[in-house]
Image (cartoon, rainbow, N blue to C red):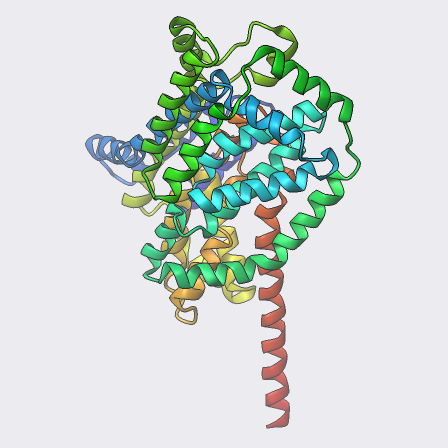
Length: 445
């Protein structure tokens, strides 16, 4: 009972902060205090509590470094003219009314190739967001399409660390899982594409396109050399290079191009990489300014605090205490409905995808009538996607920050909740059919 009370108090604290628009960092600090008090009530020593907290930081310290690299990368691509060059070339090819659906397709392809939602958001996502602003298309809709595309590959790419994690903890074959993931995502992908096509059809901004191209050509050296940093990311990711190494090499290439092609001074470039790129021409600054290591500080704090929870979940019964109640819920509804409830709670509390996946699998793995492959696919259809719908989650916040959008974009990430809803509907239909079959069989007998 005390486990449920601790979780409930924390969730209420989160809701309170969201409603009053209070910085989520305060809610996370409040949550940490609640879990410390829970551990003390359960007779854990101060030393054990400190060890629990530190164990969480040990798990994600590399991720924090990746955030800094992503912030630097988005600034470096602006300083080198990479984003501006891609936008200029693309405006000649893409009609505004098709831009939202093309954004979804491009980000889906990119995320499938490189296997990371964060990397896709920081590269293709930033490009698409910049183009959307130049075309006069609402950024919150485009960012929703970006998030949807980012999670397409994060869920089912052969090089996705998320897919590898699910296969590992469920002891299943990753490539068999991917085949089944494509099957469960086919209808939701079509539905999502239709929605983005309809949303984008009313936009047409040829005059704006011409203005943006003119401004970019006047203020930057637009040529094919500027595409090298983006090509590096794609090639190295396809070659399965470590994402941090790929980003670092792309940053180095961007720095060289910024100095020798765009004529940036070393002092200004260093300042841009740390504090964010700033263009002296105010007429285009809203389109190209942004990025920098500092832009990721808030995200690093959020992830750092939320990672402190990991030890409490792993070393105490804070989450495991609800297993029996989840089993009752699954019997009264469906297995996937119960898993979805677990995923939502885990996402809200853990604020990250990895811990959500691990907690969901741990709670749901004891159901005898669900084989491990089926459980793995259901985890992919819930625990991989739902964290992307939590505004302060590490799974989506870096994408929102990189594209200079806000959490209002999340309702437009249709792919992330159409898949769970589609699978949930199927689960109830299957259970209804099975129950009717059993009833009919009993009547016949």
